[in-house]
Image 1 (cartoon, rainbow, N blue to C red):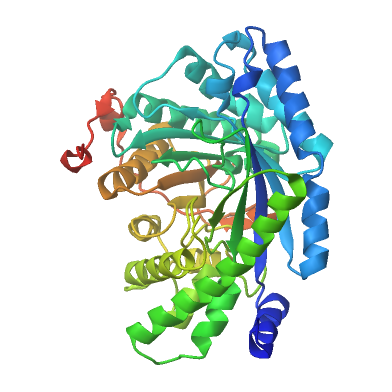
Image 2 (image 1 turned 30 degrees about the vertical axis):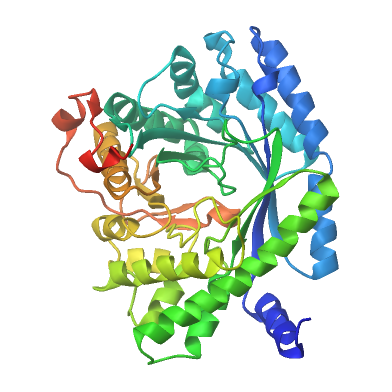
Length: 452
């Protein structure tokens, strides 16, 4: 039985501290849609997605009304298309992205993820075809998101793929240049990609998953900030305990929504991803949590320690609230999606180098960072390689989602809209890594990866 205090506290979190369920994401396997003809594969994939997800949006709306919990997005993730469509002719891979976009529009979801490839150890012909089609696919669709896993702790870093992706990102930026290169905002490169992540742009339905599953991503940076306001000046033990207790409460809300969605849709419940994911809305900022912890701005000395504390405490609190915590789970630090983080970049407090250090202890990595449009492809590959190395050696998920904004230089502003927000274009080192990237091949896995 809930006490009156607990009910009032939850109502306060929802009404005054921006607690929301960021996404209900339905994962759908497309392995049984395999066909030698791309046209047939696209038809099967469209039919299966629209069949399974036809009631997804309505279920989210009904749950939101019943419990008073804002549900920001409904999304779909599918089997990586480079796997599901591996038997199709490679010249027509972008057609699969168009089919996914059409299916997402038909059922009314915000995004669909899984136009993806897993190339951490090697590249198939289907992988090559999918990566080559990424610029066209993401520039000519509205809802499709994509990722490439280019590294893992067990396999090392596929530097041939990393080198190619620098050029691919540049091509995405050019093809969507009229919209501040927004296609790049729908693409991320992973190390140790999670197969049950409900957050875009990196969501896909792993091959070890069942036919369909419901994964829920909760978020509540405003709730955590408000809780920390009550322990201002207290020691770190008190701070950590406060974040843990708050993460527990946030996760319980997500668990309720996930179980309800699973029951309504007749699809098994998968995991809760309890990541603190900011939005451009005032009061919904991870950066403001860091300031409440005692930093003048993100990027100040102590920022990496502060993010480490936050990330660890969120995970500890969440795993006590649900037996099925998964995805990424921790703290996101996307620059464009967090107004206060973007302001720190604009003020010069948060540099790309300091951001990279913070990614060693956060949930993802270099995320939603706008850089000058004339940044060389090799430099973009170098940024990706650095993030892959951090993830590989620390046995954690890391990612790079950088946006070389065509026609804009450091100090300009790029606007992406919606949850993607606006970004100050951050300067990038002028020192070249071209010869390093050109070596190619694979960086071997670290010695501590051998655990059998």
